[in-house]
Length: 61
Image (cartoon, rainbow, N blue to C red; front, side, top):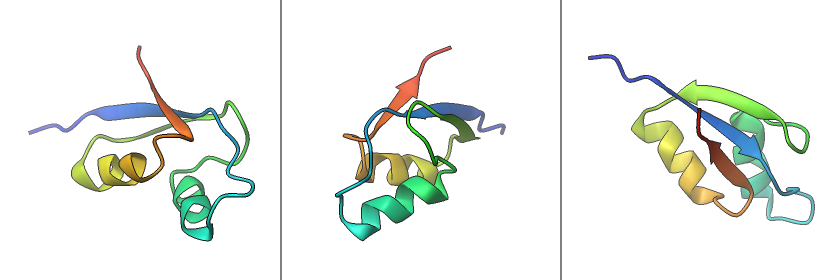
């Protein structure tokens, strides 16, 4: 079964946030504001996105 992908965008700066949140953003492949990354749509990445929903947005195609 193919899982597909999701595209996420960094919409708020991780500056001034706890170190755990900064690490999650970096692990998702995001470095700069308004940068997008395409990641696999699985439980692991969905959990990472759920930890920092105030910093990210899921981009609809």
